Every structure is written in structure tokens, then in C-alpha cells.
Figure 1 (tube, rainbow, N blue to C red):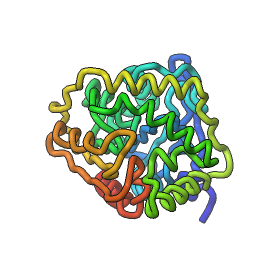
Figure 2 (figure 1 turned 45 degrees about the horizontal axis):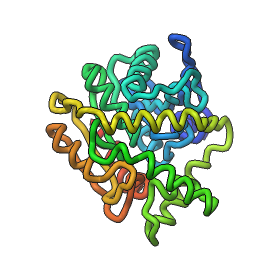
Figure 3 (figure 1 turned 180 degrees about the vertical axis):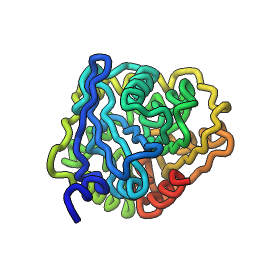
Length: 284
């Protein structure tokens, strides 16, 4: 298979591109067949372009145009990270409109799910389908505690010379530990043109925005008419699993998938099961 073809179907090989709009340069990667409605990936706290699991992205890209991007001030994108989720959603809208899209599907994880909700509430005409994973609604109980959980697990990871995601995303048991190690290894499959890590200042600003989101008045999600798939593990310590059920109740007609014996990264632990489900959901 040629390199060009590989770049179109493998996230680990997708070239990094940039787009400058309103003085901000956004870094992004795209793969899959061009044309049609793209699937746009909204990434989690502290994450850059290199934090997407290729075992989930690649199956989606087998049939769809997929775009991942660095939020403003993160990774290779310039500017300052906003201290509120609404502004992050505004940035995403600016970026997507500058790319020329007037209809998209969204696949979002964690903080990305907060941003996606604010975006679809403000611009419902932009979004056709919505996938919300490891996330919860604005004002959801316990979201503001993400800051404490995150700092504790970063300390635990530092003491054991581990990746913090092994603690934050997975159960620390006989099932979760090997799943965590496998996930972290998959994120290293890209060996060239890797993204810059998020700065400490940007990371802290994202945490501040998450805390504000958790302490805000709930958004009205009852008006959402987009087909929505919601997924999580049954033991999410970052964004409590009950908030996925809360989202399911708030968004009429939504589908809910909860994976057993898994945490915040349940979709990554169960990627072999989840990837075909999300690919089929987005393909329709």
C-alpha cells in the first residue's frame, strides 16, 4: 500500500496541517475519504493531536472524512487557552467555519464533550450527529471535582513513573492495568511529526474552565434533535458515570452504552467493541 493511501486511512500517519483565522493558527489532522459530512473529534483535558486512540479513529476513517484539531493554545495551535468552555466552543465554531463546513458530525470525549454540548446548543444547525463519551452535562454533579481527582492521580503517576492516564482513565485492577498500558502504547504508534505537549499554564486554565462548567447552571438540552450516542465506563472517577445516564435522560432519543469494569477510558478499554458501534452510528 502506498504512503499516500496509508495517510488517508491511518491516524498515526496523517499529516499535520494548519489554518490561521482571526490571528490564531489551528493545528489539525485529517484522514479518510474526502467529501461528504466530516466527523470532527473534540479532545479531552490536557490532550493534543497525539492523544486519539488509533483503534477508534481508523475504523471511523475507513468510511468517513475525519478531522482532529488542537484547541486554541494547546499543542501546535497558537493563542491562549480560554478559561471557560463557551469560548472553547466559539473557537471550534470559528475553526470549522473557516474550513468551509456548514454541517458536521461530532465525536467528543470528556472536556471535548463539554465543548461539543455548548457548540450544538448555540449552533444546532451545524451538527447532524453527536457522540458524547466520558462526559456529562453543564452543571452536572461532581464535574467540579475533576481538578482534585486530576492532581491526585498525576501525583500517583509521578511516584510510579507512569502515564497519568493509566490512573485517570482506567481501573487499577487486573483488567484495567493491562488495558491502560496497551492504550498508552497505542498512543506512541505515531513516531514522526508528533505534537507539542500542553503547557502547564494551559492545562491549569483548562481545569479552571472545567470547574466553572461544573458549577454553572444547566444548559437546556431538551431542544437537541440530533441523533446522539452516549458511552462511558461504569466506574468513571473523573466525570462520574451517572452523568452519562443524566445526559441520556436530557437528550431525547439518545442511545446509551455503559461498559462494565471500566473507568473514564471505557471506550478505549473496549475499543474492539466500541469502534464498530460508533462507526455504524456515524455511517447512517
